[in-house]
Each structure stands twice: as structure tokens, then as C-alpha cells.
Length: 189
Image (tube, rainbow, N blue to C red; front, side, top):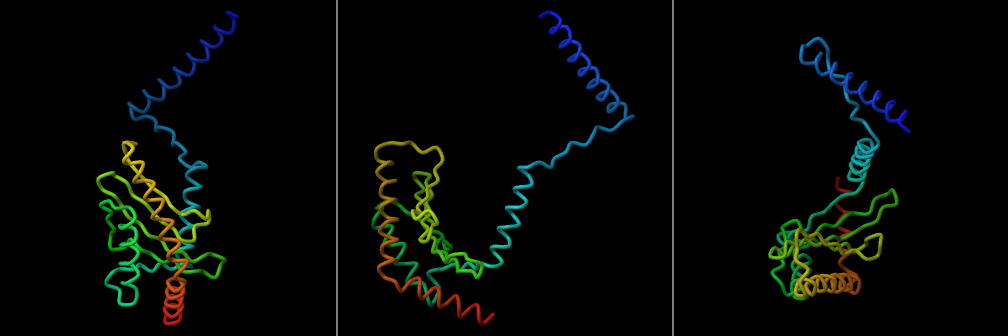
């Protein structure tokens, strides 16, 4: 058992001496530190994912729906009011909170996405009409207290999503109008 300790000590001492020599050479300017390879699986996957996202964005088009938009301002206002009515909190929406993603030719799907926030809770939410999971409600919160009141509000966000999605489905015209607009815009380009 002691022989292992001695050999381990020798290896550690050798490693320390090599590190010290490299440090001393670097300090004296006689040697350069060895380059550290920064390329790894994680970095490569980030690069590949970035390329994939860029290629999808080249195929898919995003149409930001604003209240000022002549053709779809009514849709944005109606969607926001429905959510505010359901949640009943100080829900806020940015100008670019409602986005229509067009259907691409490569098998992608069209989607309508609504994003909003409840500032006093530090909560942001996102509704996705055609989410692949079938249940496209997402929330982000930073250091939110899980009080009974906040949990009820999260439940209201969930209810607002259900109402929002059911409203779009039962109307039937919203997605059709957006799809027709997208096709007309694509043919003009």
C-alpha cells in the first residue's frame, strides 16, 4: 500500500516540476505557453445549431404583427385583450409580441406566437399556437416567490393560453388570413 503512495507522490512531483518549468520559461520569455484547444463537442454543436437556425430563418419568414398594421392590427389588439382579461394582472406586451411564422417548403409548420410579461412578478410567457408538443405555453421567471397568489397567476397564464388557442381555432379565419398574406407577400418578392 505504501508503494502506491510513493509512486503517486513521484508522479505528482513530476507534474508540478513540469508546470513550474513552463511557468518559469513563460516568465523569462524563452518559451510560449502551449495553445489550449478550445474546440470541443459543445462548441461544435453551438456552431452547427447556429448554422441550422440561420438556414431555417432563410426558409421561414417571420411576420411581426403590430397594432399599427393595417391588415392585422385588429388581430393583435384582440389577442392582447383576451389575455389581459383572463389573467387580470398588469400584463404587458411589446410592439413585436405577436409573430406569425410562415410555413416553409421543407416540411416546417406555420405558427402564431404571442409573448408577454407580468413585470411585478418578473415573469415572461410565450404562447405558441402550433407548438410541436401540442401544449405551447412557456414561462420564464427569475427569483419569483412561489406564493399562493403567484401560483394562481401562473394558473391564469395557463388558462389564458387555452382560451387564446381555442379562440384562434374556433375563429379559423386568423391563420387563413395570415397564410394568404404570407403567400401574397412571397409572390411579390
